[in-house]
Image (cartoon, rainbow over the protein chains, first blue to last red):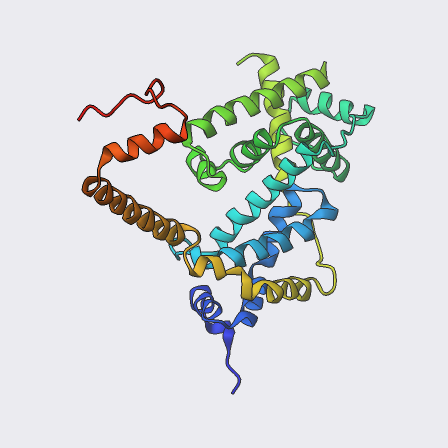
Amino acid sequence: MTRDWSKKDDGEIIEMVLAGDTELYGILIERHRDHVMKIAMKRVPLDEAGDLAHEAFVRAYSSLPRYGGKSPFGNWLAVIAVRACHDYWRERYRSRETSMNELGEEHVRWLENTASEESGLMDRSMESRRNAAEVLAWALERMSPEDRAVLELVHLEERSVREASEILGWSVPKTKVRAFRSRKKLRRLLEGAIG
Amino acid sequence: MGKRGKNLEKVEQALMSAWNEDTPFEFVPGWDEAVMRDIRSRSAAAWAGQAAGGFGPLVLRFAAVAAAVTVLFLILALESDIASFHDLAMMFLDDPAGFIISPPSV
């Protein structure tokens, strides 16, 4: 008998996976892989994103009995993915594998132009967007894994401190302090680059 | 906010916009299968510890045994002559005069 699994919601599929039907986990992967991949692509080098998304799904599977269904599975999985990315940077930081790129003349020019832009309109050209992404990667490389994680959540994604603290598993005061410091550090880096 | 602060804010806005931009991507062929292969290889062992509740029950069982043994020793000590234990300890420590171990104040 063929069953239409697409009509089942995540909760029902999880119940069946927990009951021993491991193959159904493939449906959850298919449903959520794009979202997990987007999270990973923003946070780790592009050539590592696929492995990180893989790791997030494996971790989620191992923790599946602890998924209580209080939040949608996608949100729960997203937290696991963000934490996997955070662990990636912690590991790199510990083994001192982080290679630091330097800013080129083009980046400095982009920073100066963006800072002095009076019209209030953002340059949306492909070149400008590429420069912005590279400057951001340059700044994030110079931060600790903790500062990086909280800066991404609070300042770049504009999540609340409480939400970020839940995602990272930190206390609210710690998240608040880290968020403040990380922004200060970002500003210091940008100021130094603009000169 | 000063001019410098405003300028920095413009840069921050541009960085934020770069962060939130979606980059097109494609999964490498066989990515799903690789994840599922990994899942299958772990499926038996993955929840074994969690099904039993991890270390919790083991610790509790150990604690129960330790408590029972303690009670047993206490009963044994109350029923026997404490002074003989004391003598035994003095003998082991080579302290016949009781310099190291003072006699029980019974």
